[in-house]
Length: 147
Image (cartoon, rainbow, N blue to C red):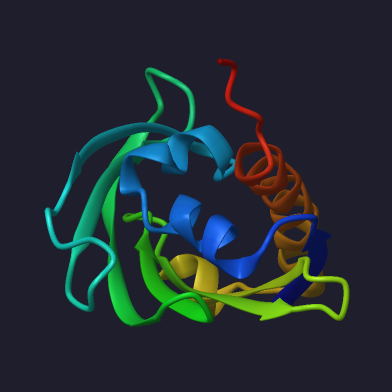
C-alpha cells in the first residue's frame, strides 16, 4: 500500500470542496486525462465518475465509485482502470493546530493483474504519483480567485 501525506495551507472544508467536485479530478489526479461524466450525487456513496486515463490513443476508459464519504474528513473510492485492475483509494483530511489540512492518500491495488503482480516497485510508483497528486490538489485548493 502506498501512503502519502501533505499539509495544505487551507481549512478541511476548502480542500474537501475540491474532492467533492468530480469534474476537477483530471486537473489534479495524475494519470486521469479526461472526465466524461459525473453522477449528480457525487460524492455520495455509490456515485460514479467516468474517466479516461493515459495518453491517447492508449487511454483506458473506466469509472471510479464512491465507497464511503464523511465530509470533510474522509472519501474512499474504488478506482477502476480495467483491464489493468482497480484500486481502493482513501483520502483522509485532518485539521492541524495551525488550521491547515493534513491530507493522507492511502492507495492499494485490490483487483486485476496489478493486484496479482504487485511489488514494492508498484508501491514506489504509486507513492511518487500520489505525491504529485497532492501537490496539484494543494495548488487548486489554495488558488486565489482573481477579482
